[in-house]
Length: 185
Image (cartoon, rainbow, N blue to C red):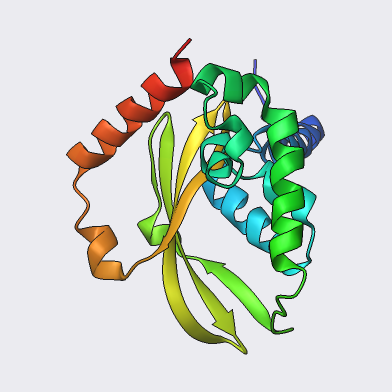
């Protein structure tokens, strides 16, 4: 009795591989949309395109409230519940502020993934602005996870040495603080 093994890879394996790759792409592109780097990139892409409704959708309600005095007395839970209204209101404010601000046509953002630090409730994302391929400076966004999605909590200029010097203990404390903030009733 002799056994022979077939030569090559069975054809159904190719189909399975293609289906798995397509499913992974679909998940990454359309289901798992709360990647902090993607949030920052999409925020600035919308900003450069003057799409202030999308800009507002990527901002934390806690960032937005500094420009919306009508929400100053709201609790964190109330702000999160009123997210849609806060988004609409901040989009109007941003539109008013930016109506006379002209941006260079060749302005771009470059995410610096080596500096990204992600925790369950927060993230840091570093990026640089470029004009004609030349770096104009580096910024860092701090993101908070609100109802399962990262939102921009703050943005500030930074340099590589500062972001490298942030200890994990500070990130853990920030993450716990953000967790407490969004879970406050």
